[in-house]
Length: 344
Image 1: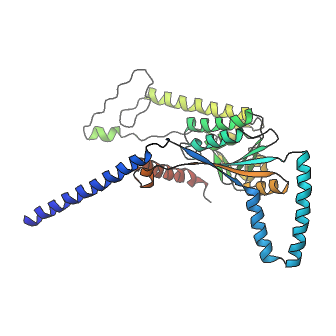
Image 2: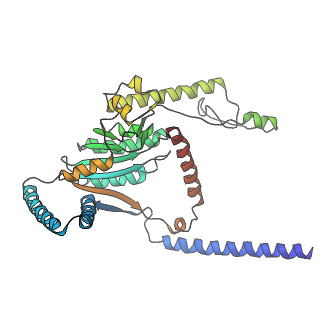
Image 3: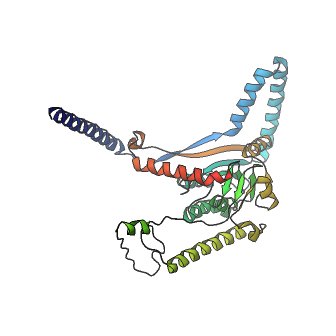
């Protein structure tokens, strides 16, 4: 008994100590947030021409003979001088490169909208925006908002190209179809123009254990299907009707943005790899984003990678944002599950 009492006292002290440490760190974190604007971030700009030039220079210095290298440098200087003279007469084209890596909630739109706002503040109609898009889709309203951000570019009359190196399915293709030109790697996955919804129902399990669940709503179809309550045929019928209507809206959107697609053939929920997607006119060309960027640099365009970076709060840095971490874990596993059908 004495041992148990001492053990209990030790555990109580340990809990108090850990709790005190957590409170102190939390207080410090709160103080660190005072005077700082919530959600403040900054724009990162990379001149990809310089990156490519630096890589080329490093390789040339390692591989080429010094005399050959000297001759190349002279020729390059002459070329740059001629380009500058030409550039004075006609401004160089700028290619702005944005990344969108979508999860089920299209949470990347929070940064994406800032990047687009920044680009639109300077971009001219002779410039171009390239979006490197990767997404297996997700919530309809979330990807609707992401698509609306791309529409802002179109409304300004700025050419929009979307490159799909891996996957743009479902909500991802909802975004991709807005492009003036869609590029895809030969084995990138595209399509899945369909709508899916599923939820478990544990009503029979609860009933077996004499657990009652009451659900009260105002409005006949405020809740059609539930997880714990007893679902009705009428509720199921309404749920499927809503699903079908969403699919119709999705198809209409694709037709509006990309009329060359045979929507009845494409909107079966199937996916196609790059070459097959090209046959169905879901994409315009088989090419990776890397190749497109290198081609633009070689053609004399000035290429800029634009990224919005959000400052992390002190609690996030300490790992206290448990809810966010849990959500990210669940979303990560969901993305893996939805992407598993594309594995070779």
